[in-house]
Amino acid sequence: MKENITTELSNALKNGDKERIHTLRLVLAAIKDKEIASRSSGEDSNISDDTIISLLKKMVKQRNDSIDMFKKAGRDELVQKENSEINIISEFLPKQLGEEETMIACEEAIGATEAKSLKEIGKVIKYLKENSPPALDISLASRLIKEKLQNL
Image (cartoon, rainbow, N blue to C red; front, side, top):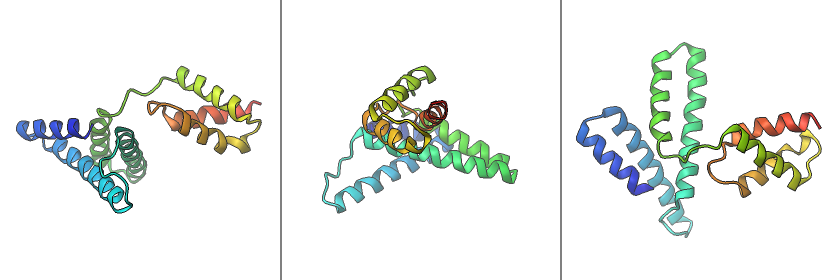
C-alpha cells in the first residue's frame, strides 16, 4: 500500500498537481512517523496495510472534525481544501460497507456480546473493531448500534 501511495506521489509530481502532491506527502509523512514509532518500540519497522488503513481513516476523521469547525467559523475555502484532502486520502481506503451490510455486522455483534441496553454500546463497538473487516465504517456502525439498543 505504501508503494502504491509513493507511485501516486510520483505521478502527481510529473503532472504538477500541487494539491495531490501536498496531501500524498502528508500521508507518507504520517506513515513514516508510524514506522519510526514502531522501530523505537522494538517492533518491525515495516507497518502492515491494515495499520496504514487505520492511519488513513484517522486522517479522514481529523479532516472531518476540521470541516465542522471551519463551517462554524464560516471559512468555506478551508472546508473546500479539507474536502479535497479527504477525497485524495479516500482513494487508498477500501470501499466502505453499505448501511445494510453494516447493520448485519452490528446485529451479529450485539448478539455475540449479548448487549441488552445502551450502556453496553462500548462493548459492542469494541467487538466490532476487533472482529470486522477494515471496510466497516465504525461511525455508521456506532449510530446503528445506538438506534438498535435504544429500541430493545
